[in-house]
Image 1 (cartoon, rainbow, N blue to C red):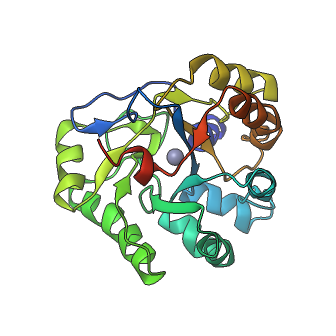
Image 2: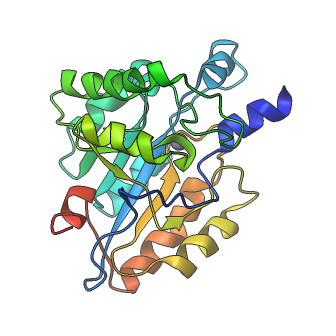
Length: 241
Ligand SMILES: [Zn+2]
């Protein structure tokens, strides 16, 4: 059980899923990149919050850094996370540099196995997407993109999401902050992989297994700015896709 919980919290992800229809990057001819954060929330994570074992799954230090550098960023939110942190969602909405998108409702693995994430029955897959789409709409956000938990998806899962009017966007740069032992590891992962058009995936939920994201960003952000990269929202990066 312990291992199961750990896997649930550190997912997303070491393998790049490449089912057809999954966008992994933008145009390679311009020095533009998208910094994206997933805000996971599973019933297991919520249990840890409810029991007091985990104080928060909202790493606000990340937002302070994004503000310091006035960076644009995209957040893929799970519906359960939105329900737990409505004030944070409202704070995101006040910032025109932020884009909010869909990371399912309770973060199941659509295609099994998926890093220990619980699965989801075929008949419930639509509601995993639509519940969060509806939540985003309640805040006035037009949902455009969906990211599969753990990046685990079959061809038919991608088709289902497309049919619901959303494009599937994953990444080409895995920060590996889920379960990282220190910030250096994350810095190395990002700085050695980023190129024009890259989509970087990190996590904004923090918690005991995702401890070093903000510390890593303190090095990553100035290093990428020095290389001349412009940080844009996904909708801008993928405009001409
Ligand atoms: Zn995730």
